[in-house]
Amino acid sequence: MPSPIQPVLDQIALDMQSRTDRGHVADYIPELARVAPSHFAISVVTAGGNVFGAGDISTGFSAQSITKVFTLAIALGRSGDQLWQRVGREPSGNAFNSIVQLENENGRPRNPFVNAGAIVTTDEVLAGRAPKQALAEIIGFVRAAAEDSDIHINEAVARSEQSLGHRNFALAHFLAAHDNLRNAPEMTLGTYFHQCAIELTTTQLARAGRFLMGGTEGPRLVSQPRVRRMNALMLTCGHYDGSGDFAFRVGLPAKSGVGGGILAIVPGVASIAVWSPGLDENGNSKLGTEALERLAREMDWSIF
Ligand code: GLN
Image (tube, rainbow, N blue to C red; front, side, top):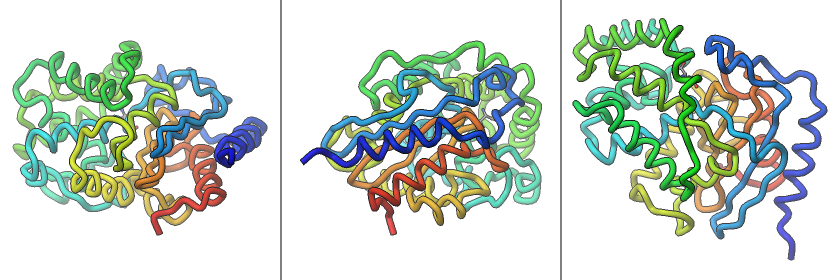
């Protein structure tokens, strides 16, 4: 029996192509402001190893905050539960780059997916090494997860964010003021900006997410108990102050990025990557969320 997945993806991609209300491309990173909002791509890798896709599945996009999932896996592998002394595990209810909560809570970020928490996580991965070495480990992890060595950092995107990353510099210095940064703010942020500038296609991202679906497909990079915890964090914190709405509409653990990508996991069943550069008011892909909502409904995929 042919899989019902491909026709569903084709129909979603077709419908998304004709949409005019596509949200707004992130413009606080100048290089991202140049990306055409007309792109749409969706890829699915199943637990059985089958790959499906529709739309611009061969065009690379900026992974941005989706990379926070990979650095979290590395940091937990290195430091285990010690990481939780430096960063919490609660949804923030605030914007991804908010500084208000960090001050109220004495420099301990709410979770590893808001920027402050991701900066701490990257700082943990850096741990006194040269940024080059830490970045080699991060890109190495993503390539190993995808089993694809053709995944790279877009240097222009990294430099573009670095030149105007005032909010992230403020967050890093604030963390340092609270003794919650081990490396110089410039070092940690240089690593963080480059990590965020990892570029990949939806096919590569869906493959890189396989370790989060559990089961036997793809390399087992993280233990099953840790995979469950990472999925719990993605569900509760993966879309910042849009996390509740995303869980309500889609019902899957997922992580978004301001490049317009989303990685979503159907535990034991599939790893999904979607990309549409236009964002909603919370900085999450507008059509990407809608596409996942439809796919989840039509495939009857939900953790609930
Ligand atoms: N590099 C981006 C930033 O720090 C990542 C944010 C995101 O994707 N939500 O602002």
